[in-house]
Amino acid sequence: MSSGKRISHLSTLNRRELLAGAAAVSATAMLAPGAFAQQFPTAKVNTTGLAVTDTEVTVGILHSVTGTMAISETGSVQAEKLAIEQINAEGGVLGRKIKFIQEDGGSDWPTFAEKAKKLLVNDKVASVMGCWTSASRKAVLPVFEQYNGMLYYPTFYEGLEQSKNVIYTGQEATQQIIAGLDWVQKEKNAKTFYLLGSDYIWPRTSNKIARKHIENFLKLKVVGEEYFPLGHTQFNSVINKMKLSKPDVIYAIIVGGSNVAFYKQLKAAGFDLNKQTLMTISVTEDEILGIGGENIVGGYACMKYFESLDNPNNKSFVSAFKKMWGDKIVIGDVTQAAYLGPWLWKLTVEKAGSFDVDKVAAASPGVEFKGAPLEQDARRPRPSRRSVRSHLRDRRPDGA
Image: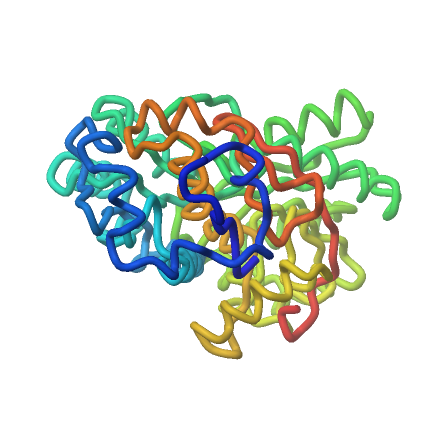
C-alpha cells in the first residue's frame, strides 16, 4: 500500500495504465520539475479557478485534532499526510506536487462547516480529505454542494446519502451491522442485546438498523437502548442497568474520547469481556491506544480493516506508516480508509486529465487503487457505496 500507480507512458492516460499497479517504475520522477506538467497545461486542467499552478496543486485536510474526536481523527491526518508524501515522491499529480492546508474541526460541527467554506472559497483547494463523524459530514455537505468541492470521507457511516461531491472510502452501516450480528448470534448463541451509542445520526441510525435486524430477521430481543452526548464520561448508570438486564451481547457504538471512560468503567464494574460478549463497530486500533488494551481485551469488532491483515500491500503500508509516525503507533479502520483518499483522488484526476471537480466526479466510478491494503474485493470505491468484507478479531491487550 505504500506505493501506487506509476505512469510509464506519459502521453496516454487510459484505464489500463491507471490500474497497472504498484510495481512499475515512475517515469514522472525522472523528468525535470514541471516537464510532465507541460503536457497538461494549467489552463486546460484547471478551468474553474482552483489552487493549481504549473508546479503545485493545493488540497485541504479537515479533521478534529482537538476535542473529544481527536483520539479518532488524528490517525486520519497522519494517513493522509503519508499518502501525500508518497505521491509527491512519485512526481505528484499530473506533474504537480501536492501542497496541503490543514484545518481543525475541533470536534464541533459548525466549525467544520466554517472551515470547509474557508478551504473551498478562500483557499480554492482542489479537494478535501476530511471529517470523521456523520454529524461533521452532514454539516459540511451543503457547503461542498454549494461551492462544488470534492470531499474524500474515510469513516464507516450510516448510508442513506449520495452526493457527487463526496467519495465515501469507508463501509456503510449494513456492511458492518448485519455481518456482525449474524456472526455473534451464530457463534455466541446470542438471544438478547443491549444497544449503546453516542447521540448523533450515525449511532442512532446504525442501532435502528441493528434493532430491525435483531427483532425482525433474527427474531431475538433488544433489552435496552441508550445514547450519550459526545464527550460523555459517566457511564455508571447504564452499566448498572446492564448488570440487571444481563444481555447476552453489549452492542456498543460509542465514539471518540468517551470510549476511554466507558471501557475503564465497564471493567471497574466487574465486566469481563472474555465472559460478557461485547461487539463494537466504532472502536478501532486508534481508540484502543487511548482506552488501553487491558480494558477491552475479549471484546469483538466488525471492521473491513485490521492492522494485522496479512497481505503484501498491508505490510508495506504498515511499515511506511510506522516509519513516518513511530513504531508504537497503531492503525485502525478509518486511518487506513483515510490513506486511500489522496491516492484515489490522484488516480481519478489522472484518469480525467483534469483537476476540475465535475470531471473528477464523472471519472470516479471504476477507479481502483492497486496499493490498497484490503482484501481483493474491497479496493474499488464508488461515489455512494463501497463493497467490503467484514472481519472479526479479538482485541488483545497490546492493541493488535
